[in-house]
Amino acid sequence: MTIAFWCVFVAAFLPYVAFAFVQGVDPNNIRANVKALSGRSARAHSAHLNAFEAFPPFAAAVVISHLSLGDNRTTNLLALAFLVARAAHIAFYLADRQPPRSAAFGLGAAIVVVMFLHAAWG
Image (cartoon, rainbow, N blue to C red; front, side, top):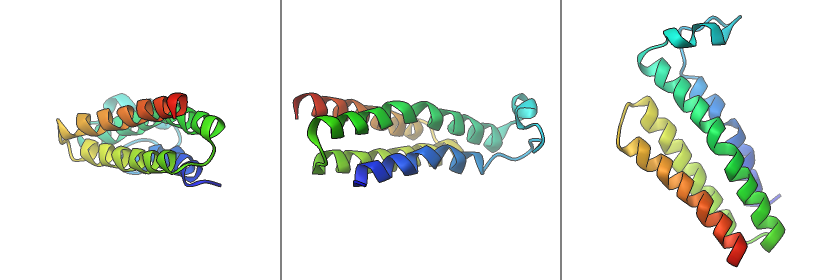
């Protein structure tokens, strides 16, 4: 497996890292109390959902890049950068740090766009 494919594997589990910081939910029915969350727990839940939303385009970009170009250094570096940006996004979300949170989100999204463009014109 390539570095980029390992990054997809890690990114698939990032939502659960964020969710580990959620407190105050009923473990038997987690979704029932989500609206009652506040503070750090609410932000952790939001980061959890956002990580799920960011995953599919990233995974698609990695697969398409590999189909187009094969294993290459640029895709591997972009995938690693995506993981760093997404980990920073979660950290900034938990710490209630805005605008760095949006900057980390934007960087992750831009990396996915660059990865698609690299596959198209690489």
